Length: 426
Ligand code: PA5
Image 1 (cartoon, protein in one colour):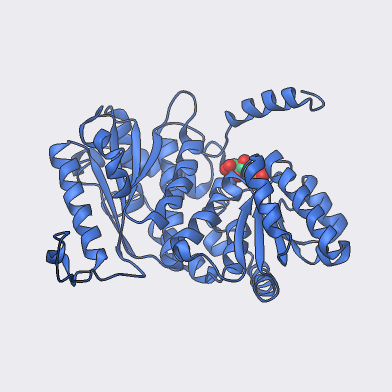
Image 2 (cartoon, protein in one colour):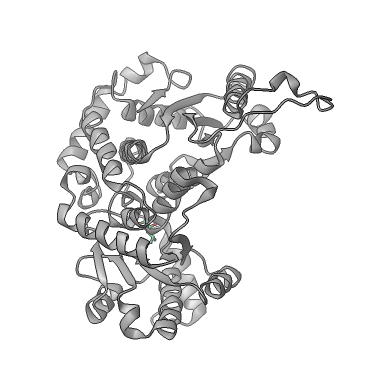
């Protein structure tokens, strides 16, 4: 489904030097014995997920598709970025006709929140609230607002049937509310953290409601699990990629730039930035993940990449066959001089832009480039890709001797904010 070429970043001799380390970390991941080992539930999830729950989820999602104009998904971080990025990657700017999917609870922005609430006033909408802890402030405020608008519009009884929650099996304020109100509820297992949860109901409920084949996604992830559970650095593309990142980090390239040539893939870069940034950026260590969408950003950050401080390497996500394409027309006057491209597809121009840029960056700019080639973007490939990156991330973080599954740093802003807001106990 994908090809991974790390040869411009690290050579075979250097890769081989990682063999022992990778073997022992891989054992740790498979046997769940490393730091944060109680959060390794995602490793076997593609095979171990609750099959009955998935059927119930697909049925509820069908009900949402058939009965509502809009599904508002309230969540943030790992409870938001997976579904958001998958929807963009699979549906593009067309989005989903019915139900339209709108995200909320990922910001405190009064403008955004007001505009969504106004928009919903004359829409038939359902709510999918997603929070593992059930106490995240952005999500909780959004849910309070949404719930009250919905109850006002359709009454408490009807609202209950229009709310679908994803949260912890037993803990948290949202779980208590779900029990009390009898919402249809799905479990984010205790042993899976937010940013590793895209293949659980956290990602799958909104995606199924958008008409995505979530079973195919899980199938893709199953294939990835089977392929990447071994420590063979000659064939395991996932760990070859993880090792290339570590090598870059230790050789003065602390910035990884995700590159796509498809705007609809740019949310995948956002998911990647959260996955790697929140997993690795600890104890004053870690690569800084950043992203660009070319050719758009060749007219902005392209200058820096080509000629600026030599601190970054690229990881390019190149989708070979787009789902849609456009042919460039001929023009009898040819004033813009574009007739040399008449009859050619834009996918061809995009690929040439990619090849030209790759050469410019690698050869002239001296920027090391990893290349991940994706044949075609569909649900199965995306499931495979999500698993590939989660496993690569765990390996990368363990290579840095970091616990990939906690995020102690994000608590500090919350404490300050709660103090300023006058929350009890802060
Ligand atoms: O990856 C993570 O763990 C975080 O980004 C969480 O997903 C995010 O903070 C939202 O948390 P919760 O699902 O508890 O609302």
